[in-house]
Image (tube, rainbow, N blue to C red):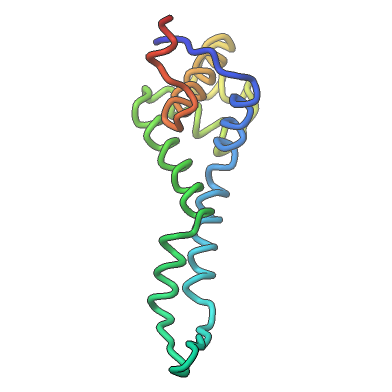
Length: 142
């Protein structure tokens, strides 16, 4: 596997997103539910009185929310990256980032060495960085 050079700040950001994967999924659902469940209001149109189409207004909010779009892009990038990596990497993702287990517990459960643990961790972050557009693989060969 090609080793990419990733800026430390980007590495930390991606790990933050990996650790918060489940919380991001919950937050997306909460935002969508809040938009759907909010009470409709009447909109005044000058010269013609009131018009109201709460369903259309909610649909527009759901499709144009920048917060939802950003979070969904992140989730899709993580899902795509994990789909491209071997099963061992997925096990590490589940244990380390979703279940927040310590390195020793992860190494014992998979089982693997600490060196392999750190290599797989780096490969996960690199693949997510690539899927999020932080890394251009073609430029890494020069």
